[in-house]
Length: 160
Image 1 (cartoon, rainbow, N blue to C red):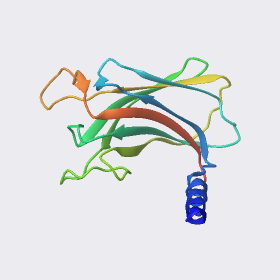
Image 2 (image 1 turned 90 degrees about the vertical axis):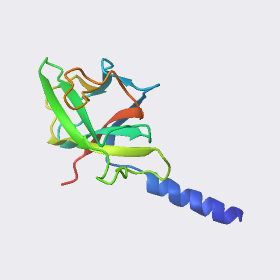
Image 3 (image 1 turned 135 degrees about the vertical axis):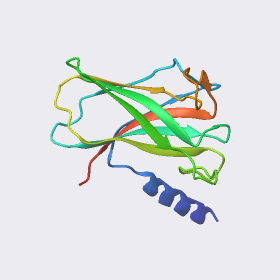
């Protein structure tokens, strides 16, 4: 029995190895994501000889009330340039079934942000993420977005 447990543990450990990840960080959201809460992710310039794929990662549970998600993501370059993107992601199927990975009520979504990015400027980069959810016909944003547990930012080496 013990040998079986050790073998399963080794298999799981090998499956979880990740040689493409360069940066992967999460921030927990406690009690709902406030519309004014801006999450910051800082990282040093990765190897300039590679290109990278960038992702916003999000963990949500069944308290999340929408089938989509709007985000405002800013990438601040070391020399002052800022690139702002307003992004929309689908979070659920039309029948209400959550997208994302996970066996429980918590789903993890790996959301594409940018593809084949080169980091040509030396120094510290800063990525900020803020939700931009609104109810239909409402000018004001949703004050507190329930069901969001964690928001992360991930950089992977582009393998193509």
